[in-house]
Amino acid sequence: MSIQLVWFRTDLRIDDNTALMQAVKAGPTIAIYIATPRQWQEHNDAPIKMDFWRRNLQCLAENLKELNIPLCFFQVPVYADIPQLMQEIISDWNADALHCNTEYPLNEVKRDKAVKALCQKLGVAFNGYEDQCLLPPDFVLTGDGQPFKVFTPFSKKCLLLLDPMGSSGSTAARQVKTMEADNLNFPLLDSQLNLPEISWPDPELWWQQQWPAGEQEARQRLNAFIETRIEDYKSARDMPALNGTSSLSPYLASGVMSVRSCWQSASVKGDGESAQAWRNELLWRDFYKYVMHHYPHVSMNRAWNSKYDSIPWRDDQEDFQRWCHGETGFPLIDAAMKQLQQCGWMHNRLRMVVAMFLSKNLLLDWRWGERWFMQHLIDGDFSANNGGWQWSASTGTDAAPYFRLFNPIRQSERFDAEGEFIRSYLPELSGESKHTIHDPAKITANYIAPMIDLKYSRDRCLAAFKENQ
View 1 (spheres, helix red, strand yellow):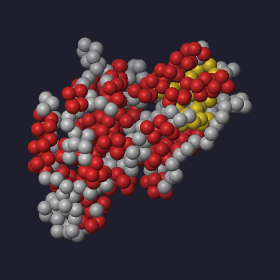
View 2 (tube, rainbow, N blue to C red):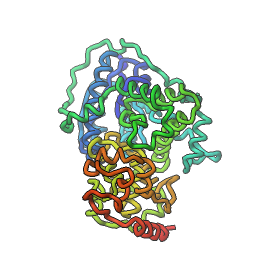
View 3 (cartoon, one colour):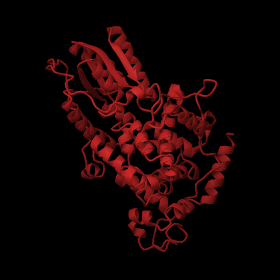
View 4 (cartoon, rainbow, N blue to C red):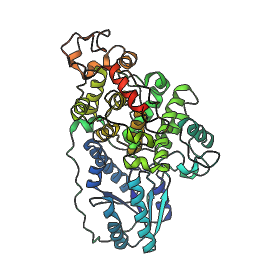
């Protein structure tokens, strides 16, 4: 009997899952998931994210059960321990092949190289599939065969290669929506492996209510967005008080839904400006994975643009803690940081605003903020988080120019004109009018004094960056 192993990682779904589809086509399939709690800690994964993954794994196990495919759980501390465990799994079940979808961060690449070498040693096929992006990163290159460094030409090349439904000649075969339910009609062998109970954080009820798990929930959210909000996306997406975004990022980050299904759903709406704007955001997601694949040094705590590795960042933990806990004295910054603490999520416009405030106005190392976000975000995605922070700090590919600093007061007046978002997270400012709530100098309530003068901080930032031009 030819046993196929499918190894789930950041692809916790049945629908449109390349590795699962190929495993099932090849023979009777056993699914595995390997928890690595110490590695998660080293990667700064948030408790809310880990609990979300736990709940989605429960849903995945139930969905696989309907296909007669068992999902077996294992645990080792770190990635380096996986090859030895994998050898025991392969031996115990006498597996013929291992199937998995490719991941791009450097630690994951090293892990998979080690497992592939083990499989070659054991005479077991190792089958990796490009599944996380609309197009494989090595498939999108410049005319002279080099990786892109700027988003706009990257996106234009992607649009040339993609058909309207988000597939190309090399990926069209992946569009599989159903699978036969009789792929595994034999009892599992008695496993000799030690299967410890996986350590997960204690869940909090609001997590589960605000972020329900499962492919069905993801699909319902996608359908609701496409049917009721996507046509207003271009104008509403920057307004944090509105429900103007898709709220799908946790489901994409965990692989509960594929980026292809999002692209295809948006394509149903045609070529309207708002649908195009959302598809553009999906391409930004792919671009940051693309950058991590082609420029692996960004996975090593380094700036993509090496000349900015020597920026004289300030070492001020007190200022950092005030930023972390929403005590800067600038209402929009503080409300955004409160949203992160209370929801495990932050509106995308606000992510850019608070990131620029930390890295430029406070001149604190962007990596501090990158880590803090990962420690609190339910949708923490290494490539997207790293790319977003490097964009805001002007250290990354296609980043905002170093002399661009968002003014938090102007951003507040423009994108939260009525002050609704600020009041929802800063009740102490509930009595402020839309004319006074944005500017610390105009606030009538007894609120925190601003921690810095914006003009002074701008001049300091420009001087620091100019030294590294």
